[in-house]
Amino acid sequence: MTFSGLVESARSRVDDFRALRDRGLIHKTGTFFPAGIHYPPITMYPPIDGEQFLEGWEDPDDGRYVFYLHVPFCQKQCTFCHYPIVTGTSEEVQERVVDMLGREMDLWLQKLGLDRIRARSVLVGGGTPTHLSPRLFKELHEQIARRVDLSGCAQLTYDVHPDDLVGDVGRERLRIMRDYGSNRLTLGLQETHEAILKHMNRPPSYALAQEAMAACRAAGFDDLNIEFIYGYPGQTLESWHETLCRAVELDAEEIQFYRLKIQHYGQGEGPVEALYDRAPERFTPNETQILMKQMAIEYVNEHGYRENLVRVFTKEPKWTSAYTTDQCCRLLDTIGVGPSAFCSFRDRFCIAEPDVNAWSAQVEAGRLPVYRGMVRDRDAQLRWNLVLPLKNSEVYKDFYEERTGERVEVVFGRELAILESHGLLTQDDVQVRLTRKGRFFADEICTQLGHPDFLPHPMDGFEDGPLKLVAGVGA
Ligand code: SF4
Image (cartoon, rainbow, N blue to C red; front, side, top):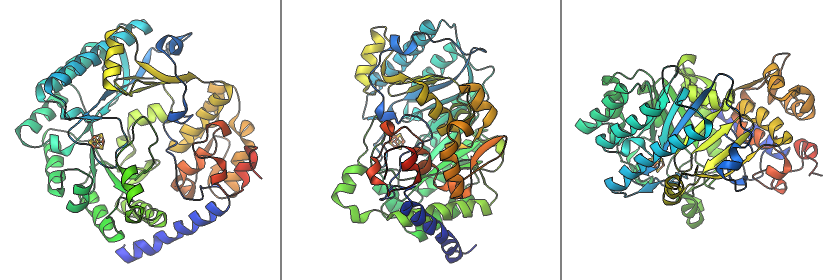
């Protein structure tokens, strides 16, 4: 499809947006809250300590966990990024944190009564794990290998920065990851235009992305996932189209598109919020962002990528992220280690202390660095079991009943019927899933399935509408 054909075709989604907003199903400003990883929203958990978090906890029947490790370092702070990260640290500080990560793993093993974490799938993220020097990067792998049993691990994924993968040092990092069993990499590329990359505070070179991809292939990686942001200041429909063409040319197994989030939604607050306050006119209007997203969907579809998880496009289902599927769709128990890492267990959730020094002090004192969280009550359990799988893929009705003792179509009958009547959702005897239109607005829709006490945006930000009435807070 030509550029103008793509834009023209994408316009129907803007019409959908206006109609849904006017019916009170999308926030009046078009703002959204990422709904697919946690319920309730991550900022709304009360303080809790490790003892409270683990009280009454029993390991999963098969003793297996999803495992996440958070490395908090980055070379520079990207303007759009809200993750709590640290920059400018010395090798000495990094060495200490790598050591502490091992010690935190030991604490979890001890508190859970395990000798090793038997991992189903693993993600090592951050931050930028590859920011570590090869020596410390190898030590990090050793820390994991000593404590995590990877023999049944479907995928061992690293989040990587293209800048860290090139040249001799980059080759060494890639070799280390391969030697220790990594079989999937996620490369945050974000953009392909020099001026925009520069404004993002990233290495301003598309050639670097190409070189990094080639280095990954040469090192033997056959499962590469690349990520891009849309709605960033300076992007136009034309430049976005060019980025889409380049994204497809890079020939990754999976492509993800993120919408720029101006307001922070977790433990950190990126520079973008202040930039917006200073010059909101420089930011991409909401309806242009909708065009960009629909253009991306149509362009990658045309080139053989399918949306296996919402807003994640893979060439074949086998390249889908096992970590995301395990944690967000199958709702399997996840141990997170590192500052700001989260643990998501079948009836509870916690997030670790985000400040590296405070996290480190807790671990050194022999305490789990648990910061905030909760053992979910009945209402939160019923909603968590619906919102995450629905936002990311689909809800199997028998699976929901197995986990909650209730039929989803009974507990949420009115909400599902409303969404169905607006063409956003479809269901049969087996499953409930969002339609193509529903998947496009998945965050916006799923956010409203939360309890009124846990809505990230006050309800007066929505026009009066059917979900507002169901929630008992509307007109
Ligand atoms: S986007 Fe990645 S590299 Fe940039 S600050 Fe965030 S975690 Fe670090």
